[in-house]
Image: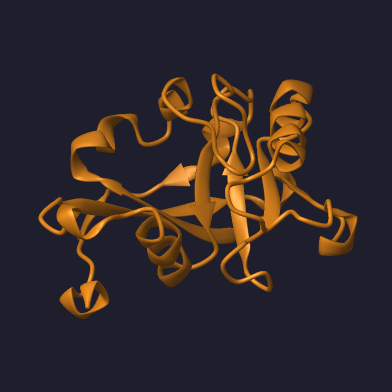
Length: 154
């Protein structure tokens, strides 16, 4: 069993695991309109993955953190960082990584895809396919309040 974490704005907590955000934006591992939920292998990495997208004017926003438990059998691992496109870490994300994740969702091969974090490549992010038939086997704990330490905004 793998433990993972997800941090979201408190106002979005009811839809945190639906993949609905795909209607508004693409991400590193998915194209627009491809439902996907991003999680990380630690709460610290989840905080970093969230924080890199924030501006200082959102300090007042309330967040929640979810602890998630994923059965090992649901996870498909990317072979290795060496198998990724050479510029997989570039900003903004390129079409190559978006294609990898989008193709994975469309294939319905697994409920979870494990990928390296751009921020900390030795750590893992987990991409959840909320439409996969086995997604219901993922255990999602009750959300807990989360806040970023004020010193991060300096």
